[in-house]
Picture 1 (cartoon, helix red, strand yellow):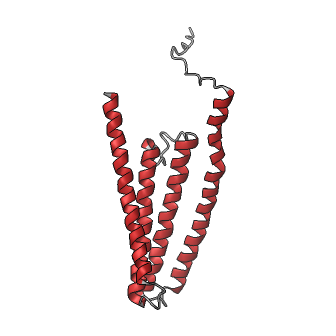
Picture 2 (tube, rainbow, N blue to C red):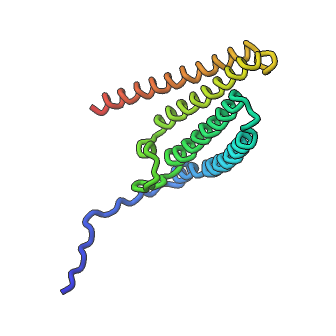
Length: 192
């Protein structure tokens, strides 16, 4: 005797029908798709830049000084950090602002993607920018210190501006995190 499987008692929720104007406004999020595709092209450009830097380092490693090798490695790290920033913006931005990627259960799903929202994305981006700025500042300090500020093209004012810009990035990240924390605690109080 064959038993027919029972139909599920839970009906899948149907998407509400939108009026024309809300449908156009909500659908406009897809206008960002070319922007994210463009960032993927930029990611490819960074791959080419990374390979070029790596080739230069590998090919000339015997002729380079320790400082030159360090500068080349810092350049590679800089490219990787910018590339990581691009991945965060592409994946996190698309997931947050355009459409779900439905990666739940995929073995390669980024850990941070499960709890990404606009606030988390802003903080992650701010931290990535601080990291990139730190590498650039370190390169400036090494180049200016080893070559002499006049020969390296660095001036005290230029280095000072780089430090001030870096401090501004740090203060901005702290401000973003603080405002995010305030809004989270405000939302928790409102929910109670």
